[in-house]
Amino acid sequence: MTQTAAPKASKAETTEVPGFPMMDMSKFEMPKFEMPKFDMDAMEVPAAFREMAEKVVAKTKEAYDQAKISAEEATEILEDTFAATSKYATDMNKTMIGNAKSNMIASFDLAEKLFGVKTVAEAVELQSEFARKQFETLTAQVKDLQTKAQKAAEECSKPAKDGVAKTMEKFKVEA
Image 1 (tube, helix red, strand yellow):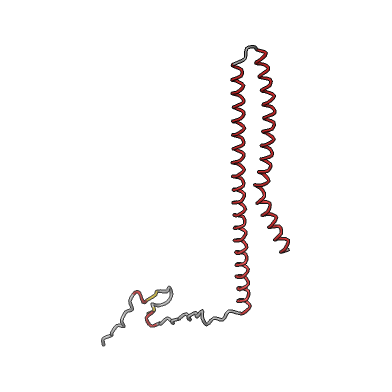
Image 2 (cartoon, helix red, strand yellow):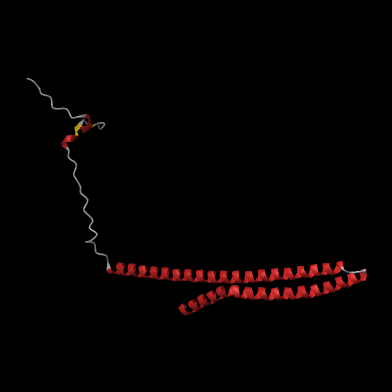
C-alpha cells in the first residue's frame, strides 16, 4: 500500500499560527469588493444649499467689485497728490533759487561798492544800509515762501481730503 502524499502548499500560501496546525490558504477565497462609481451628474444638490452658495458667490463678487473700485480711487488720489506735490515742489525750488540769486547779486553789489569807498565811515554806512535792505528782503522772501508752502500743503492734501470725504459719504449712505 502506497500512500500518496498530498501536495504540499507553497510557503507563500501557508500561514503558521502558533497552536494551530498549518493551514492551506489556497482553499480560501477572499471576497472581492468593488467600490460603487460616484456619478456627479446624478447627484442632486439641495435647493437650500444651492441658494446659499449662489448668495455667497454674489456677495463675494460684490465685495471684489467694491475693493477694485476702492483701489482704483486710492490710486487716483495718490496720482493727484503726487502731481500736485511735484508741481509745488518745483515752484518752491524755483522761488528759493531765485531768492538765492537775488541775495548773491546784492552781496556782490555790496562788495563792489565797498571796493570804491574812501573812508571807514562810508564802508560802515554801506554795510548798515545793506543789512537793513537784506533784512527787509529776507523777511519778504520768508513770507512768500511761507504763503507758497501753506498753499502747497492745502493743494497737495486736497485729493486725500476729498477721497476721505467721499468714502465717509458712502458709509453714511450705506448705514
